[in-house]
Length: 512
View 1 (cartoon, rainbow, N blue to C red):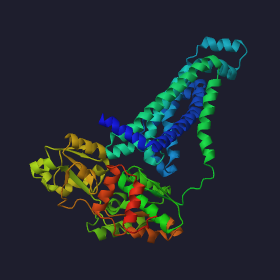
View 2 (view 1 turned 45 degrees about the horizontal axis):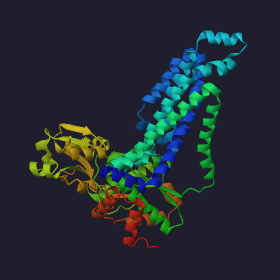
View 3 (view 1 turned 30 degrees about the horizontal axis):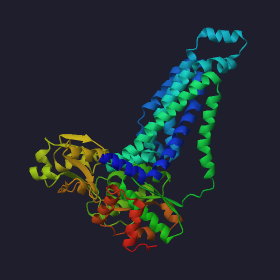
View 4 (view 1 turned 30 degrees about the vertical axis):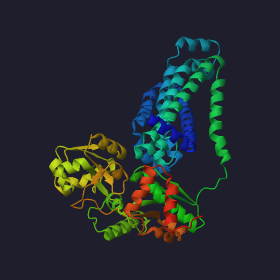
C-alpha cells in the first residue's frame, strides 16, 4: 500500500512534467511513423514491381534495425547534434523494416488471377494498384505499421539521452535515482500509449475495408495537425542565448543551473539547461558540434578519457593544468577555474562486509578478489583511470566483474548480488546505503576537479562569461555537494531550486 501511495503522490506532484513528457513522446512517435510510412510504403510498392532488388533493399532495412539504439543515437550526435532531429532519424530507421517488408509481401501475395481480372476490366498498372492490390494488401501493410508504431513508442524512451524529451526523461530519472515510482510514471504511460496507437490503427484498418482510404486520410490529417499546430503556435519564440549541457545525474544538473542563475543574474543573456545527456561521450560530442555551449566537466575525465593521457599527474594543480592546456590544444575548448570539491571515482562496499573482512583500502581487496563479485559501470570498466588500469596498477585482478549501470549496481549491492561497486565520492547513495568508500592507497584515480568546459567561440562572443563562471572557483565543498545531491536524488527537489538556494545562501545572488 505504501508503494501505491508513493506513486500516487509522485503523480500528483509531477503532473506537469508527465503531461509535457507525454506530449513530446506522442509528437516524436507520430513524426517518426509518418516519415517511415512515407519512405517504406512507396519503396515496398516499387520492390513488388522490381523484385530483383527486393532482397537487397529489405536486407539494408534489417541491418539498420540491428544497430543498437544507444550506439546509433550517440554516433549521430556528431552529424545532426542533439534534440529531436537525431531521435526522429533513429526511430524512423528502426521503423522501416516491418512496414517495408509487409508492404512488399502484401502486394506480392495478391492472387495473380485478381490482377488478370483487373487488367481485363481495362485497368492500367496504377489503377490496379490503387483500386485492387493495395486494398487487398492493406491488412498486411497495417500490421507492419502497427508493429513499427509499438517499436517506435518503446525505443523513443531512449531519446531522452540526447535531449529529445519524452517519457524517457521520467524513466531515466527513476533509473538514475533507483526510484521505481519515477520509472513507472514514465513506463506505464508509454505502454498505454503503444496500446492506444495500436488500437487506433486497428480501427482505421477495419474502417478502411468498408470506406476505402477515407479513414486513413483522416488519421494522417489528424496526425499532421497534432504535429504542426503546436509548432505554429510556438513560431516566433526566441531561443536562449546559451545552452548549458550536463551528463546523467543530479550533480551536473545542479551545477548547470548554478551557471544559468549566475549568468542571468550578472548579464543580460538567457540560458537553458539541457541535462541528462547520457555519458561523457554524448555530452562532449554535443559540445563539439555546438548544440551546447558549455557543461561541467572534471579534470580527471579530461586527462584520462577525453585526452587519454597515460602520464597524467596525481597532483590536483598539475592535473588541472594538464586538462586545461590539453583540451584547448586538441579541441579549442576552455576549461575554467575549478570548484573546491573533488568528485573522484571510488570503490565502495557495504559496511558489514568491510568490517567482517577488515577491508579498508583497495589493496585489501586482494584478500577477497577470488570470492567477491563486483558490479562496475560501463564507463568505469573501460577507463584507464578505472578498472582498465586496475590490474597493472594494483597488481591483481578481481575474478568476477559484472558490467552494470550505476543504478543496477546500487540495487545489486542492496540485494547482496555484488559486494563492491564503483561510485563517485559525492554520491548521496553512499550515505543512503551505508557504504564504505575504500581508500585509493596506490592512487589509481586522478584528481577530479569540476569546472565549466566551454567553447572558445562562446567566450570570444561573450567574454564577460569567464568572470561570472569563475565566481564558483574554489567554492562548493564535498560535504556541500553531497547535501545538494541528496536533496535532488533522495528528497526529489527541483535541481534549479536547489542551485538557487545555494547561491542565495552563500551570497552569490541576492534573495528576491
